[in-house]
Each structure stands twice: as structure tokens, then as C-alpha cells.
Length: 347
Image (cartoon, rainbow, N blue to C red; front, side, top):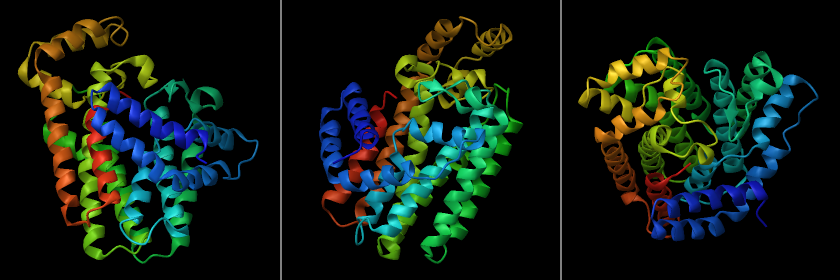
């Protein structure tokens, strides 16, 4: 049987697709839920069994892991492994490792961004302090790297270290641009490709290698993960502007409050130069302080939401194109379902 968290992850994906009006996609995700039932149960068991101690550091890590999440990255690893021989012990370690890296970045991000909410609950930094949250992220990252090392597949650890460098380079660029309303598209994509897409790319490649997929199929999976990761972040940006705060588990315009310009805002500023003064005034007034409705209306009027969703659709189609070399069957169908679901997320 599926655990409550893994079942909840797939149920949320299905609800997201249905909420976006994509019943066909939702039906595909129902099949995916059954297809990966045992794989995701194993991942949840491993995450639940990570040994912790009664220290603020360990409690911070445990708090975030226990909140669950979509577990999209382990899902991608499991699917990638099934392009080859299937979800065995090595793929299981990879799936856990990629989720630990993701959670480590969240613990760090909440400190950097002074975030109070994570997955609809108080962030670990609020409960246990900033230092505990930082060290908890470091601890999860070390655990992840040790798992990749134990897997022993040549080149995987080196690739992961390269991904971590990409992530840090992206963080450095984002920090440089923090608080700037005028950001180039080039810088925007450099940030999200490093912070989000790189880990998806590695997870797909590593999952394929763990399942003994052919080199060509592993590279195709990596390209799929890259496009999927960028699409995921673009839709995340749309939800920051036009989503439902209660559903997201965070307040709207959270990224803007943290000094980050999302893709819809970037487009809106290009199309409506007058928006810049509105944003500057709102941010100066205690961090928006009730100006969300006016800003959201201006962003929508600019057509930025439509352009952002169109970009995500192109990226999703690009991701699907990378699957053409994979053998037809339930695994490819499931990967197609995940890519399409990105377009209809509501959380």
C-alpha cells in the first residue's frame, strides 16, 4: 500500500491537473499513481527512517521532511529508472538523495528569504532558529552526497557536484540582482536553470543510469528533465502572481517581497514601463501592504500571464520531444503525463 504522504503527492498532482481543466492529464496521473505505488512507498519509508537526534538541527530537518511535498523529483527518478531495468536499490538511493538535496535548498532559502511559511506550515527557521535551519540543510546535503557515493555509479557524484556549483552560481546571480526590478531575460533563465532545472536534469539522468538505461536514453532523460525543470519554475512564477495563497501554502507575491523578479513580472515590466513606479511604491510601503490587487490587475492587463503560460507550454512540448527516442509504453506515457501536468498546476 502507498503511504499517506506518497498517496497525497499523487492526489495533489491529480487535483492540480483537474483544477486547470485538464481531465485527460488527471486521468493519466491516476494511472501513474498506481504504476509507481511501490516505488514511492519505498522512498517515503527511507525518508521517514533517516536517523535524527533531539537537537534543533535534526528537528529542523525532520520537520521539513515530515511536511511531505509533491515528491516530484523522486517520481522523476523512479520513472527514469523504469526506462531501463526498473526501480531497484540503486535508483531508490538516488530518489532519496535528490529529494534531500531539494529539501536542503528549501531550508537554506527560508533563511535567506526570511520565509515564515513552508508547505502551509511554519518554516523550520521559525520553530528552531536560522542557524538550525542552515545546519539542517547542510546535514541533509551531506547525507545526499554520501548516498550518491554509496551507489558507486561512475560519474554520478561528479555530475552532482557540478549541479551544486550551478546552483550556487545561480544563487550568486540572484543575490546580485536582489531588489532590482529591471532584470534581463538572460539573467532570469540563468537563475532558474541553475536553481531548479539542474537538479531535475541530474535526477532524470541518474535515475536512468541506476536502471541501466542506454547512454542515449540517459541523455534524452536529462534533456527532458532540463526542459521540465524550467517549465515547472515558470508555472511556479505564475502561481506567485495569480495563484491562491491558501492552496499554495504561502502568500501571493512572496517572491517579489523577497526581492526576486519572476517571469510574469519581467514581461509585465517590459510591456508596461509605468508598472515599475507602482511596484517601487508598493515595496517601499512595508512590502506591498495591500497593493497586491492593483499589481495583479496590472500584470494581468499586460498579458504577462498568458505569455508565461505559453512559454511553459513550449517548454513542456520541448520536454515531450526529448522522449521521442524512448520506447513507447507505460513509462513514456507516464513521463508525458508529468510534463503535461506542469501546465495545469494550481499549487
